[in-house]
Length: 246
Image (cartoon, rainbow, N blue to C red):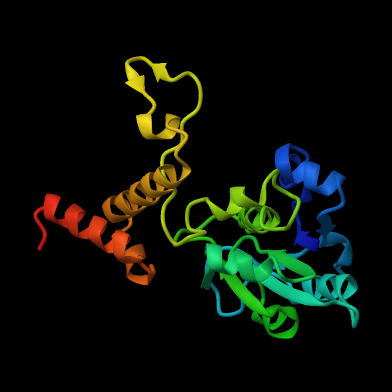
């Protein structure tokens, strides 16, 4: 997958791309990330990328011209993918959306700053606006990194095991079950015996039950979209009864 990030602060993204799993994925050629500085595309003498908003108001707005020229320079007729603008008013980024984007050959991520970008840039060169949550950041760079990380780990070969991404929170629609490693006991807390039993069927059931329980306790709205078998339904009924629900 090829990912291009358009930003006026490329230095904000480099450290994340030069460490851990993302670095290994880039070095292995599994993903390609190009940071594109928008400033050189400005036609203004001092390479400005923002100006005061028409109609008044606080802050500055990013100019359409540098953004449009930068996007067109990065894409062209050969581009096969999605052009996304990181924006608080966009569709909320979810695991499902990450899975959708991981199937694209290319992604272009536009990072806004200040009070946003001229609407004409969005109308001309952006396919969709995307938000990583209901809060406002100083710019789109952190959002771009979130999308890159979430999408990259779904690409075959990026993680050590394909099961790693499948078992994580939200991949199944549930929060992830508790994980344990050595030692067997730490500060009086022991690893659940079932995980040491070697009975893979019972371990799988325990993990499923714990995932259901955690989701019920912390994100109950997620359960509305979960397909449950008979064992799931029996467990959930007992769980609700323990909490005084009918």
